[in-house]
Image 1 (cartoon, rainbow, N blue to C red):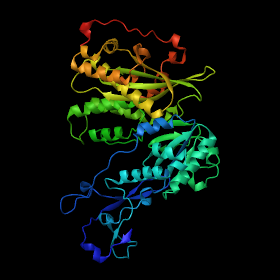
Image 2 (image 1 turned 180 degrees about the vertical axis):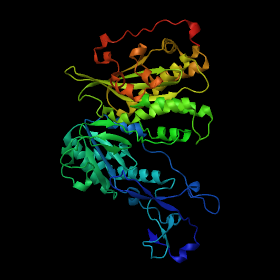
Image 3 (image 1 turned 90 degrees about the vertical axis):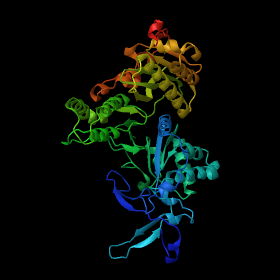
Image 4 (image 1 turned 60 degrees about the vertical axis):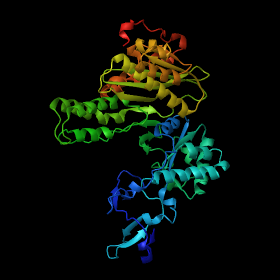
Amino acid sequence: MKLVKSSDENNKHFYLPHHPVIKETSSTTKLRVVFDGSAKCSTGFSLNDSLCVGPVIQDELITLVLRFRKHQIALVADIAKMYRQILVHPDDTRFQRIYWRFSTQAPIQPYELQTVTYGLAPSSFLATRTLVQLATDEGKSYPLGGPALRKNVYMDDFIGGAETIEKAIQLRKELTELLARGGFVLRKWSSSRLEVLQGLDKDAIGTQSALHFHPNETIKTLGISWEPENDFLRFSSHVYETDQPTTKRSILSSIAKLFDPLGLIAPIIVKAKIMMQELWLLTCEWDEPVPESMSERWRKYYKQLPRISDYQVDRYAFLPNSVIQLHTFADASESAYGACTYARSEDNKGKVKVQLLASKSRVAPLKRLSLARLELCAAVLAAHLHNCIKTAIDLDVTKSYFWSDSAVTLQWLQSPPNVWKTFVANRVSEIQHFTHGDHWNHVSGKENPADLVSRGMLVEDFLKSRLWTHGPCWLSLPPNEWPISNPPNVAETNWK
């Protein structure tokens, strides 16, 4: 920042309030300064009211985390003080003024911030757009680093990997050099293989030791916990014992802390979503205790949440040099509906691995729908989830299969949309568009893992479920041993 001259005070400008935010869990910056661009000035408007946010130019978070699961060797890092490395045009710095002093004895003086400022509406876009421009200008010289900078960076976090140690090392070096051309420094490097980190300064490594893994050490990347030593994704609930009364505010606050971009613990979270919907129907005030029946259910659920940390899932979801299939399941209950997709990979030795990739869930709408229509909504969700996953992982998927235990849904999908009424026709058309050429099959309810996400589970039951993480047992068998796909016939009167 630079000191404001008295002659500049006559120009239009804006002074930003600011305050400190302390984050004890941060391994690098414990205290950050946050600038309040949403503070109203004397006109009744804030700076953010007058600024354009900018378009989204990065892939969604779920896309980046899915790509993270396709590499044999994982590699993550983040950009040190990214916003501070990007200059704002001199004509605009007058809108980033603050009052500051460097000691309690010094006078308070006006300064202008010269770089992109945290707390302003377009800051995220400006920083991201700068990285995109850097990749465009300099990326041609870096065959691995250029595409990685475009596709595998979310805000200031790089999350990616490679198929061999040699390529992972080359990727790390190329990214370091490419970002250095824009004045950026990569730090907190971590990998599932320590060999990839050799040659780095100790301060640039994100694990506690550069020489060996600490037992059960996890690293936070894009909000998820990753254990590099065993290459697992893990979860934490951030649940703390409290004697406070159970209120709408406390329940919603606890639910909001359950972060799961891939839906890997969706059966647990959908249980909370169902309770959350019931809370809104109660119309109780934010800080008044909820009815005892709801409080009892919540306490039983909340008490089990710390055990989420016992759940782990392979970060690398495939087998090396394998044939890959995608299997997507859909199901609905009166409370919720959902879908989940599994990768089935088989190598040339006949070894098969089936692994949950991602899931999606929705609470059933308050306007009551028949179960058949909810099952159809689940099929729509399954079609979109499969399309998202297939696009994100960008691997050679030989075949995709879709499974539902709803005979009505399967019969709807066997006919062109125009023979059905509007609600069904629109959704059948959408499903057929996204799953064109892929066959829908019938699976029994007991073998349908999407049944778990449509009904919800307590943590204790979830941890015992093999079906959720690895799908039905027959998926590991040859295709000729899979269930017969013909659904039972359903009377037309039951289709409404």
